[in-house]
Length: 377
Image 1 (tube, rainbow, N blue to C red):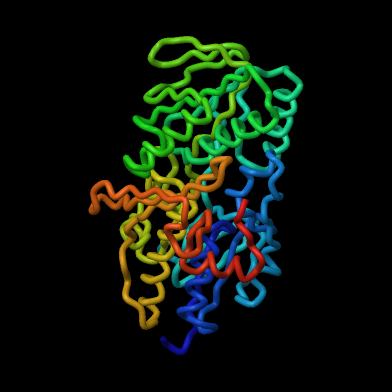
Image 2 (spheres, one colour):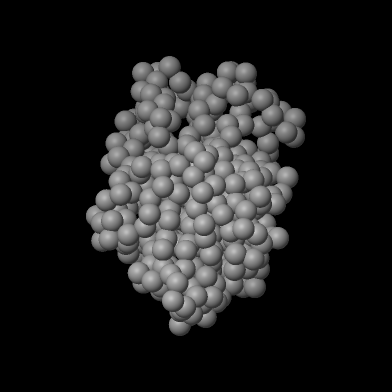
């Protein structure tokens, strides 16, 4: 490395952003000046929101200042507004300008409720709404619940967890005459994980008496009836859905029609030489924390190698890992989705990766465990 300390700007406060920060600090040490632009004061371990309405622990939340103190980034409490890839300047919404040698955009995606009148579960305030729905079931006010995956950019696994945990919650309380249904445009349940996972999840749904409709879209919910495509109407007292994701426009960077950034295998943003992206903001179709971490790792290696670190750049080769809360324990799902391994779907009740975490990151998993994270449920 040269005499001047390289300047790196990371935009975001989620999984991909923290994975980049931890990886670069490890590989470059204190020789790099790293600024982290984040509008949030906290890092929230979002996947654990699923169990909270059912009596599980509250979502793990970490104060960013305390969490990252030993990594010594410059924390900028703001949002990224623009990047000039030629002048290499990042501008925040508050007007602050940060010069960089390399920048990483990891600002996540925007969530969009798709089905009107549905409870769209995105954690946070919707945890209380889900808990209230369970109270209505217990009081006999709700007898039909549909769990719906919309088409588009979504992460479907949490919806299956909500349906399975609801079924278990109802069974434990011996509440009769409650009909549960899961509706998805997928060809098979959790098809992203391959055939073995789909068969296992289909079996779980059957055992919990959850009706499954695949290759089906919901066009409308009027509060009592769901209009489906292909054409059919089914009754439902309540609908629980997951959101669709859209990209966030960053002035100065080219995005696709949905606002997502195009990147190469190392995370380099199309049309730039020094700007990388990782996580849900990219146009990779699978939006999941572990995938975001893997994208971040590819960017970390490329950036660190460029500054002379003894590491070889390796392109992103996605391996999908999912920990499914079933109500009766855990199911670990794994599949190589790079397109080079065929259908290597794997399912087990025992961990299929060393940490057994919901989100698997080369740097982040161990770091959060060292700071007290417990993902058991």
